[in-house]
Amino acid sequence: MPGAWSHLAARFFDFITSPGLRPDEVARVEEWLAGRPSALRAFFGQPRADQRHAYEAAVSVAEAAPGRPDLVRAALLHDVGKRHANLGAVGRVLATLAIRLRLPLTPRWRLYRDHGRLAAAELGDEEPVVIEFARHHQIGRPPTIPAADWDILASADRARLHVGRRDR
Ligand SMILES: [Fe+2]
Ligand SMILES: [Fe+2]
Image (cartoon, rainbow, N blue to C red; front, side, top):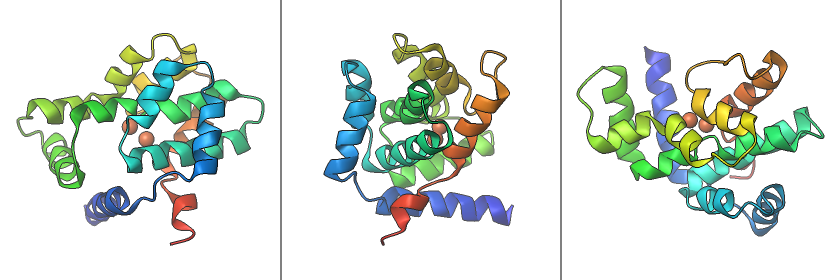
């Protein structure tokens, strides 16, 4: 349990201290999502910390799997569902605790819990791996995503904010 608390604390501080994307990073996202106006809107509609997390995940996927823009987009877009819950740092901690402790959830906490399914629903025009990773990233690999692709995506999702932290 101490590990769980420190993980929660780390996510809290990530959320309030994450630097926004720099112009060159914004340009890279725009390139990865070129011609996809609704994906771009969803990505940039996220709070700063979620943009940072998704960007870092995408960079690590681009390094691990060159020539796989579909996997890069899966990393970029997997958490876009969280924005519908519209929770700040404290709200996210409370939602996470309530979910873990199986307490009754408010409607916004429920949206937060279901962010993978929400993202999958709004990403219906994207490549299958983008939709499937969004839907399953909190649960586990579905048969539709090959193990090698899943490992790349899941480890990029876990590597939280390392690049962004380097210079602060
Ligand atoms: Fe997520
Ligand atoms: Fe994530």
